[in-house]
Amino acid sequence: MFAATVARQHGFPEEGVLDLKIAISEACTNAVTAHRGSKIDDTVRITARTNSSDITYEITDSGPGFDYAAEDPTTVFRRAAEDEEDLPGMGLALIRSLFPSAEVKRDGEGTLVRFTVTR
Image (cartoon, rainbow, N blue to C red; front, top):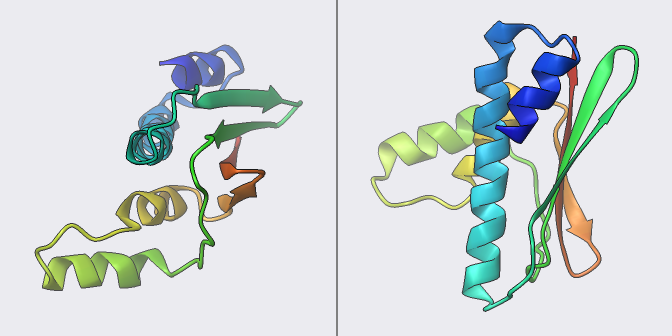
């Protein structure tokens, strides 16, 4: 809701707010899962930075981090359709399908997911 409110207050078109909420939700789900898996009792941080034409969102966790190798989202989705098991990387593939310029990288001991939306 935070991300959607920031977007609406800064004139982001309503038709893109659902995509934004999905991307933020996927990033936060991954962060919370990393924290739980490592028994980390720390906050997941969501920040929004605005300028005259863009809003950049960052989701940062304190989990163990990982080396992310970007894959084409359609490749990940195709593998998931062919294999009925829970496939790691689906959330990040979904984020990148909605926001192709999304970045995923180690941030200290955790992970940073960053993407920018344009009004």
